[in-house]
Length: 311
Ligand code: COA
Ligand code: ZN
Image (cartoon, rainbow, N blue to C red; front, side):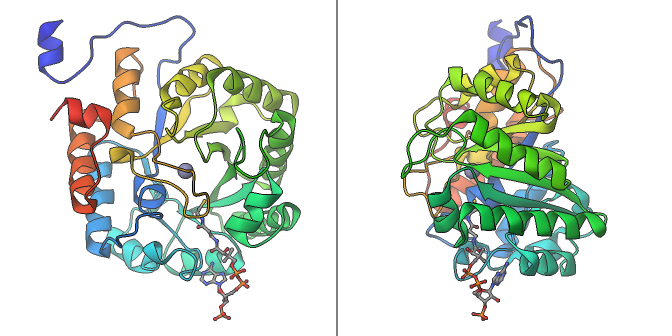
């Protein structure tokens, strides 16, 4: 075992009820950078994305085609896309409305993500629309994107609690997700935008989705680590049958419109746990650590736990 640890990898012990393989959906270049006060140059963003792809991450969300007035950090979305070249299927981008979709398509996007909120207050703060209007807009964008042959992911924010509205009913979240699936989303990512979720909630939320006709195979889980619960929540998600998890290299991230949001679950922390459970991801942990460390250094941010432990 000491040899294994010396190599910078955990010892492996499987656990019953766990999947053999999991998709790690990397959101660092988008979620990780959207709330940083320092704007990262486009060339450094492109390098970050490329390093993450080289590490074996199959999907690396690249940027957002949102209003540059709302999120100036990602105003260079088209420049980042052109820097990434041809292989854009694996680089989804966020689009909040039809204008965003047009911009994304013009920049060559092949895969987009719409985002709505489970709560009304956050829909207004994040999108400038009430919850139902945001859902109608998302429907419109999904239909238009599907007509163009794009893959579409749906995000639901505030699935585990909202800083303004408090607890959020699992059934409410499931209704929103079901609507996104009906519109044509291939997958729905359930966001714990402010990181307040706890492990028992996860299975409950996945069950509520099954009752609403949205199976675990259509779900991804998106945790922020504000209260240090993200990995426990992933573990609960694995036991509930979810096999796609969002994470951010370096543990960067947050939402500029939810003040209490802190960093995403770090990709390297997630990989360490999955490797320890013997779950395949196809991702090279040291390469992710190196990419995350470079971006944390650039931004003057502390390293994630696993990156710090391996440094
Ligand atoms: N990209 C670029 N510009 C956009 C745009 C887009 N996707 N959508 C709207 N705009 C422009 C409009 O053209 C208009 O420009 P003008 O003033 O020069 O005519 C201006 O923004 C205002 O348009 P409006 O429709 O009133 O938008 P808004 O200011 O109410 O903003 C959103 C609505 C959805 C664009 C904005 O809330 C947004 O970008 N939110 C994203 C937040 C986010 O990324 N959060 C983190 C991810 S969870
Ligand atoms: Zn997030």
